Image (tube, rainbow, N blue to C red; front, side, top):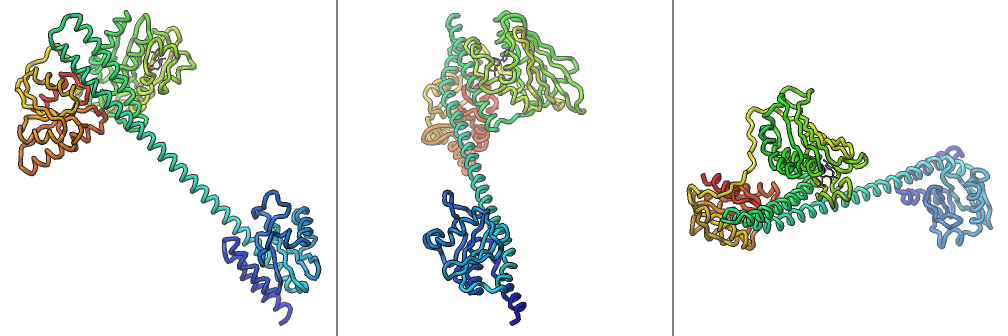
Length: 555
Ligand code: ADP
């Protein structure tokens, strides 16, 4: 074979051994032993600068060696090690590519792998020139293959790290969702547990107010009632806030009459202002349309919070509400600006942003002086945002504040604002006495409902759980069932489902079922209706609410 032909055939054979794999060890394992065999060498070592070096060791171990080094390069190749130390100290530079060092009877060929590493081959006698030349040409290719492998490993590692980070983020998200769920469940449970006895307190107070009592007793009972109401407001605020946080609060849009809503909302606040000798007036500009599409309950809640605060934080002077029309909206819409102005204590400039954060109050001493949870403005500002507006404050400490927000309403034609239930002083006798089946496990609430319903002329049969309710329903066939949701043995949902099933199977007329429940979430209402119940009354309810829902359902 001519030298040229030999060079080409060796170069070809070597080239075939390079870059067959993207895993560095596998690639070098396929390359080095075969190359040694082809070039008739004893052994070979490959160092790569980017390959992980062992920290604290003065000479890095080879990325690959054949045959395998026992005990490391320093122990197994002490003579080579001293040369290597020189090369490493010199920044991996060899005197010239292909430098050959003779140690004992062996020739060490030092061949740079581009600028990325070093190949050392042991042979006796030294490699012929053709082999050296062929090898030199292949080393560039080996460098590319090594870099590709290192890059591949780096990418794999980065991908693994990204996967781990993504997994950790998912786990953290899951934990946060779980914690939020647990918190919401806890609040719902707390709300249920508090509402049940509150129903007893408020209901029995109502019942006593409907009976013959002395003026002083009436005064005490009114105080019990307003204290219970205040406690309930706090529970409702905490529940609202938790719903906003978990994103489960939604607005219920319906046609409303703006002037009617304001007329219904402000009388109790007027009373509060009067008690503090404050002037309280409000004005709705004439050009503000009356029939709007909005969430009356939530708009009322925002106004009560803002006007309530204005009265609470004002010692003298006045509180004024103005409702005006803003321009610049599409036909069929109205942008309405609500402004609540007071001449009260005002809010320092550096506190004006934080009061919209939950649990924040302008001043700690304020909490002690005026009370409050610090949730009202956080809830109101979130509700205003949900209505598409922003709640803002301008304040002059010592002289008063103005809270204002504007929201865009769609215009409607038929305003139907549900009026606030006004408590009557006497209970009217029922037009039509009903046979009522009451399923309720709480003894106080059971007694309360029985007394109240009997007082207006209804006949009540009681059951203490869902199973008893089904049995009583089968025998008595009442006109209506008042069904508590949470009961031992069988809950109200299951009992209602079974009653509806049996009605269907036996071709019976459907008995109206009204859920009476201390679960105040709107999802609970949906669950009741889905189980075939007809209406829903959440505890605590007043006597009139109960009689109204009975009238509504049974007529
Ligand atoms: P709360 O009134 O229950 O403390 P809010 O969220 O309604 O909670 O109000 C937060 C704080 O904002 C109040 O504690 C008070 O410091 C301040 N604030 C709200 N409205 C007014 C107002 N009209 N005048 C002065 N300070 C107010």
